[in-house]
Image (cartoon, rainbow, N blue to C red; front, side):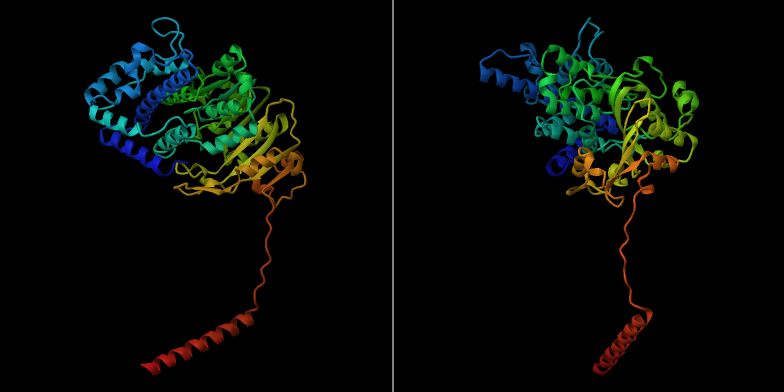
Length: 493
């Protein structure tokens, strides 16, 4: 979570935009993202220059050529407001829109980033506002990945509550936990069918770089596979697609497959059994019309509930042997409708349900107070569920109120990961512990209920109370002392 000086800087920039007439929060985020992107490009170019100077080697893959030097952040930030405004609007902005462009002069065949940027608009209202924002952004060091993440987290938090389609931002530490528990491999084809700003895809790319950099950068084919074939994301919000594609590019993934798609409404046979890992926090928008929902999903589970439809979609998109880590509202775990029961039965009987992590309701504040859980499962189409691992998360390292202040000493996340990675030690755990295993037969006997409260046992401490006679004697003694005190006070008066 963002704290201290950085939070104040972002708030000040936000207020500058707001008072300058940019009142839509998404527009503010989009315009600030463009500027942060431009700033980061200059920082990347500077790092390459320093490396070339240090090694006395030619400059490798420069971001700007000699004729574009005036488009760099470090150059135009010194200009007068009017000249800066004209330079960014007429030259810098068209430059970033053309990045990654291949093929013909119209940009056909360009990267997904280029395709999303075609409709981008420069909406800074006045030279004065732009100069003020540039000056403030210049004081933020964008070279640190955590800083970029903190900036996005805080800016996205300014979008009022959960948004129109049940969208709310997944905290980065929860995303990181899910990625570490699924442990992506270089051979994985990873998808988030409701990607938003691409948080899950970015976390997966960072995990692969940290743990498998030798393999993903081994040769040109491996590098191309990482940049173009590993990451796939869909969303039906074009602004989110632009922000997400820029976010991926800033994090070093050059051409991910991020595209416009209403995942529940469009049937795409090319996506059937295509992915080996799905990481997602799909929107919980309530209900959809049957007419607007892909018919093949309704054939499996006839429901209007988006959370159930998304789970059905994930099963269709996964390869056999593919795995998923998905955030769902608690209602999915214990809902009593035929659709709820049928989907849970499919996960337990036909696939391999591996884990259910129950999260406290404050995890998604200030966006929403909904209680949620993380489901981990593998698509087998032949069963395989033997025991399901349950974990009762009590704390995630932040306060569970709207402020969400950091509390690193109160986090279950390291314990969750450690226990998950050492399943042999879970066999003997009691149902009173934070985590335990439940056999498939018991889940089936409980109508496939997956709520942790169904299986967890609570230990009650025996509290011994004094008998009523002793309590009455104590009260009588107190009353005598009060009466005596009152008489002494009357005597003094």
